[in-house]
Image (cartoon, rainbow, N blue to C red; front, side, top):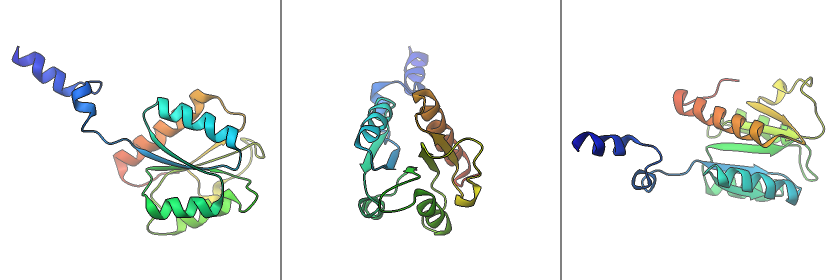
Length: 150
């Protein structure tokens, strides 16, 4: 009986343990409401705490109010460039360790996005498995090292 109790305590799917775990926070900036809704649904299902913003101003306000574990930025926005936002965040000591995924319909896998210092890139339209794999990968790298490796 004692062994069963110990096994239950180690089980990550144990509802009793889940109450004490905090969800990892993801902050998203995209100007397209339909994309935000799809990404939110996918990541909510994966048990992440998701905050969506549609403007750079709203994004900066949310960033000041919370410390996200991961950021997803649209590359092309009406009021800003997601790549430039990424570069600014990576050059700031307080945000440089947060993994950032850039996504857009305006670049391909052949594009060199290293100048923006993003950790991952995702081309729209994207496969939801690819999205969740990239999110999980970046969050696990952050959890292991405490800092990002591009």
